[in-house]
Every structure is written in C-alpha cells, then in structure tokens.
Image (tube, rainbow, N blue to C red; front, top):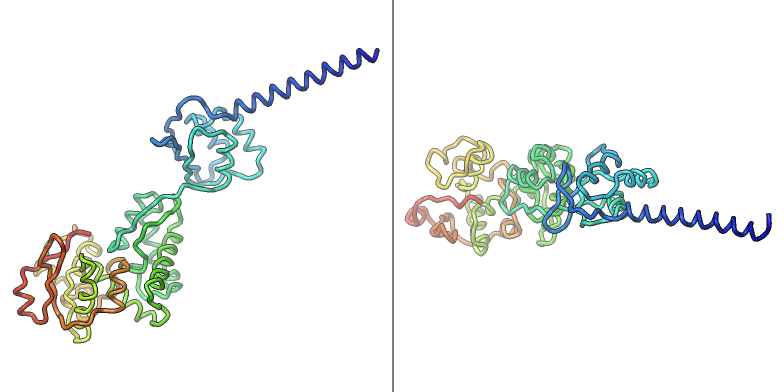
Length: 352
C-alpha cells in the first residue's frame, strides 16, 4: 500500500472515530439536558409555584426506580441515561426530601441526590405549647409522627440523660423556630429541642448546674404556669412574685392554667373559655385549686420571659391576681381576698 493510501485510510478511520465521538458527546449532552416540557406532579414529586421540584427519595428505593419517577414527572429527559449514571457513580442517592430548582441537568440532579443535602422545613413551636400540641405541629409539618415524638419525649433513658426527674419532657423542650429535615427521627427532634432549652437557660444567665435536678424541675414547672397565666410581658415578674408568696405561705396556687391543662391535655377535651366550680374541683394532682404547692410537673413550654421570672420572682406583697381586661390580658393584683373578689368574675385566658 502506498504511503498516500495509508494516510488516506488513517485519516478516514480517525475521521470516523472523531465523528462517532462527536455524535456520542452530542447524544450525552442532549440526554443530560433538562427536558423542554413543564414538569408534572407524580407520586413523591411535586412542582411548586416558584419553579422548584420537591422530590422525595423513599427508604430502600433504588436509583433506577427513582429515575423512572423523575422521568414520568418530566424532571429528567431520559430514564436510560439516569440508569447509566447510577451504574457509573459509586455513591448511591440518599433517602430524604429535596427541593431542587428546575429545569436541572441530570448530572447536577444526580450530584445533589448523592450529596444528601435535603430540604429543611421551618417549623415554629409557640411559647406555651404542650407536648401534645407540639407533636401535632411536628406531624403536620411532616417532620415526624406525633406518636413517635411523644414516645421519644417519654423515653426514660433520654429523660435520665438530661437529668429530668419527671415522666416526660413536658416543659423542657424550648419553644422556638426550628429547621428540620422531613421524616427526621423523633428522638433527634427531642434532643435538638432539649439542647436548645438548656442552651437558652445559659443565655438567660440561669446556671442549671447550680440546682439539683429536682430544684431545677420545680423552677421549670413554675415557669410553665407563669407562661400560661401571663399575656402582658411586663407582668411576668409580678405574677411570679404572687406564686412565690403563696408557696412560701403554704397556700394553694389556684392557677386556672393548671385546671385548663387537666381539661385539654389529660382529659383531652376542648379548651374552656370559662372555669366553673365543677372544673376547679376536678380530682387530679395537677389541680392547684385543691392541692397545695406545685403540680407534679410543667404544664407547657415556657419561653424566655416566663423562665426569667420564675428564677427571679418580683418582690411584692401580692397574693392574688385576676384578669380585668380580657382583650389586653392585664391583671389586677391584690394583697387580700376581699380585694380579689371585688376585682371581678373568674375568667380564663384565651386559647393560646
């Protein structure tokens, strides 16, 4: 074969290989590109109004199976190319919920799902929320089931770890705004909220280590009652002073909030907007109308204002208080029962 013919053949072969490579590269680029059609909602994949897709990768789901759903939703152009990527990449996609801006290339999407950087959901637990209400908030937000949360909050090993002598974490999980992953383990949710609680105590200048677990628990219990009694923050220290005065004198606290707790959380009845004699005579350890001293444990999650007041009650001579302005929640404070009676009828705060 002449040298010219050899060069011609080589050039043809090279040209053919180059063409095939170019075609392959073009095909890969095409398959990797985001689909031109608008994505649709399918099982586990929802398209939001702000051009993003919320994608849930199920526990035990293979990458190939996830790819079929992504293709069906129109998030990726080719399920076959996705399958090829899944075989090439050594790292598996991870279970969880992800929020992805669309359109997105398959390479970018695959990288995100392998990273495990899941969507975080913002959930707010308000001050004064009980464990049961907190459980409902978390379940509605898709963080964890209410049952799992309550079970974790009653775990004796966890309670002992945080030196909580009570039967549950009631009152010791800080009310705040949190960012959690969807389907987050309930135990980790409880730990996060408990860690935040004790961290907040420290930030408020309250040294938890200066108290025995029993002493600290009593302070938290008092704070929870103050939380449910006050509506105007500048009254917290005065209310705390009233309760402290009654405790020192061996008087019953006669807190409406403790009766409300029995009705709504123990009996699981609707929140009362007025208490009657039959209510304040309910036979229950939490009823501070018939039992002297503090109830067995907290009745809600106290916030910063209530905690500060409980650990540093105001110095006053008041023994009674009652609501005189239901709209603002302001109270009338009195030193004797006659003044208390003349202040008005027995009312309870709104359903917070």
